[in-house]
Each structure stands twice: as structure tokens, then as C-alpha cells.
Image (cartoon, rainbow, N blue to C red; front, side, top):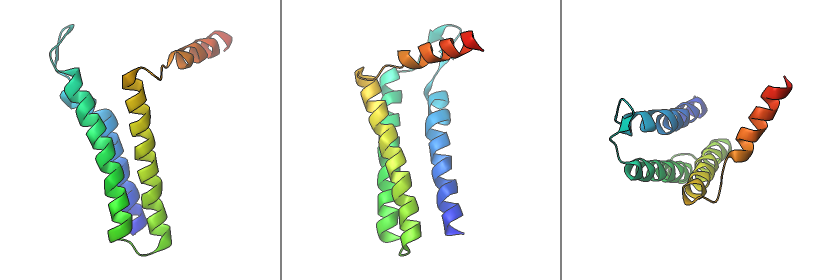
Length: 110
């Protein structure tokens, strides 16, 4: 039961951060974007880092069973990896042109 709860909470946080946060922080009228992109980036970075730290603290403080601790550590690793990808994407170190080219290639060959 606790395992399902941990998975449900982390999935909800992930959906909130990846879908809800950009939708909530974007204010657009027609083709004019009124919201600040830097505020969105800052909230996303803090949200991902906070979720990773919350999972680490939960594994240390709330759970004694090794399987439950492992689930928390796995989710912490997921949030930390997403934070790293987002950080390097914002710096311009990661570009997703390869993904676009791959999808175009797949579309042309199907």
C-alpha cells in the first residue's frame, strides 16, 4: 500500500511539474507571450530539485524496509536526472536537433 502511495505521489508531482507548471506560468494573449520565461525555469529547477530531496528524506526518515527505500531512491534518481537534463538544456549544452532529425527520418520511411 505504501509502495503504491509513493508511486502515485511521485507520478503526480512529475505530471504537475512537466505539464501543469508550464501551463500555469504561461500567460499568452494571441501571439504575444506575457509571462517571464526565467520565472518558469527557476520554478521548474527548484521543483525538480525539491522532489529529489523529498524522496531522499522520505527514504531516510519515513521508511525502514529496503524495498520502500529503494523506490524512493529510484524516484530521487529520476528527478535528479531530469534536473540535470533541464539544467544542461537551459545552458545550451544539450540540443534536441537529433531528435527532430530522427523523427523526420522515421516519418519519411514509414
